Image (cartoon, rainbow, N blue to C red; front, side, top):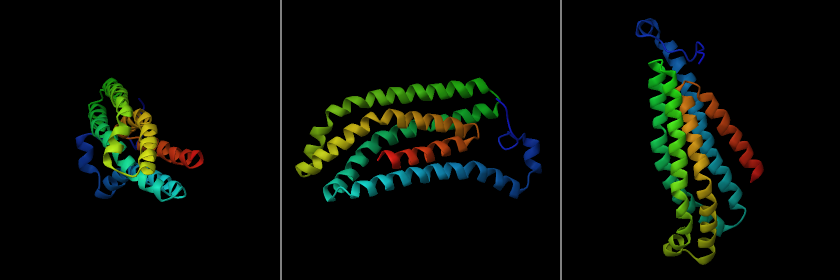
Length: 190
């Protein structure tokens, strides 16, 4: 793994010589792409909601509860998979580069397992949304939205694991470019 000046780990002796401004610049180079990635995820949700709003009030009423339902599963996986970032970053700092790859593969396996584990929820979604008590039209839209979304949980979790790897090796721009590309594709596919 080649290291550029931007991603090079500084020994403790060099840290004493670095100025606050240099440290701030290095931190911003890491933080800004991560912030842009998070903002692009919010932008995608906004664009999706704006596009659904053209379908009427029932469709808008269905998207929010269905999205929250899906996010419960995604957020659990996200909470587990962002650990890849810490483990990879620690391994990089110890110059144990093979461990960086090993932790990433473990994250991929966990994402695949979680994505498969959530698939059986597909068959319980109609009962859940009928139990909630929304009108039949809204409930049917919620069921359709969630059933499509459940199939997409695995790719989302895989993206989180891989993005965490790139953040851990100090290359958050990769995740940012992927998120922006996903937004562009989302706009045209919607």
